[in-house]
Image (cartoon, rainbow, N blue to C red):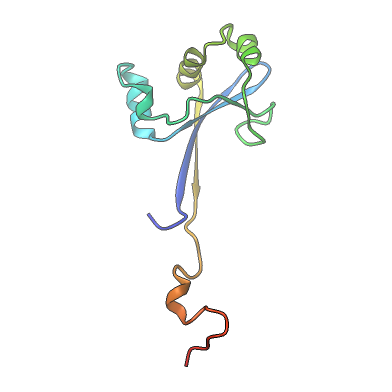
Length: 119
């Protein structure tokens, strides 16, 4: 993978009052989990955090969901149970970021120390 190149995968759940987001690290393991719940969620989620976008879909500013928001939407405030519901019912959103353009190592392009001139 080129420097700066990355793929971001998130699961978006559109609730009745809010939009919820969970970030997934390994989409292949997540897809296995959808068919086999014995796969630990820790294998494809590194941060067990639920984000809300304040009705702005899968984009928008993301804030951590409060327990009261989870209780109002899902009827439970236990984050592990809510994460399971979002992962089961949400839709996958993939974003790819292009690799970085320009010089990769400025130090190899001549002297960059102030006061020295490459001759």
